[in-house]
Picture 1: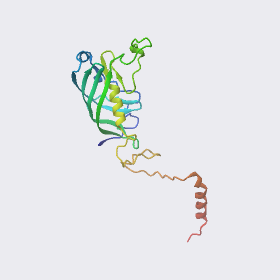
Picture 2: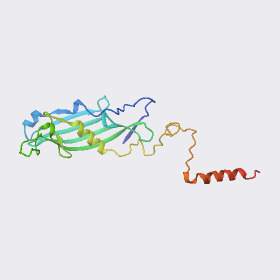
Picture 3: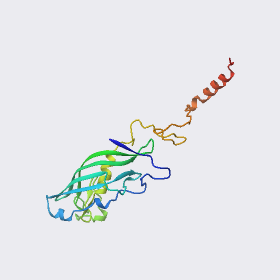
Picture 4: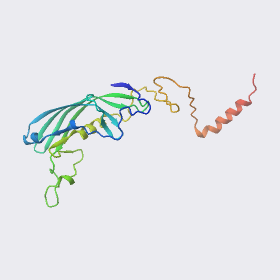
Length: 214
């Protein structure tokens, strides 16, 4: 489900922060105490308002919009994060450039690995944390904390369609004057002629000029 918000005023970003990435303090969760209690779990809730920018998700500043409801489960190897993300996020329509809200409902089941597990030097010693390279599709527990920002960014972006459209019948904007064609029309004339047929068009135009008038 999509809700149209409207096109930003000229010169404004409409809330879009092209240089920012999602880095919410709400999503940096201490898990030291949970790691000491193996096979236990804790509930985690958060409400954030996010949009999609050039580098991924960014926080818009107002709470709300996207609801995170996770269980954090402790195991000898790390912390499992399981639950759902539901609500809406802000997107920019690729046709009319207007902002709209896209409803999402995303299941989450990911694992944060304890540092040093599965990685070692040739002598069999654990790799230092600063040079450790996580496995593909894995997240690491760092300094007794799990950072959910990357998880949320990955899960949301993977759930979105390639084209961001406020509606399937969005008419877009006029490429000449910039008028939002969903709101009004313009007087711009668009003549799209294949360059290979341009000479034929000229001949037809010249021929019509030579026809006798009534």
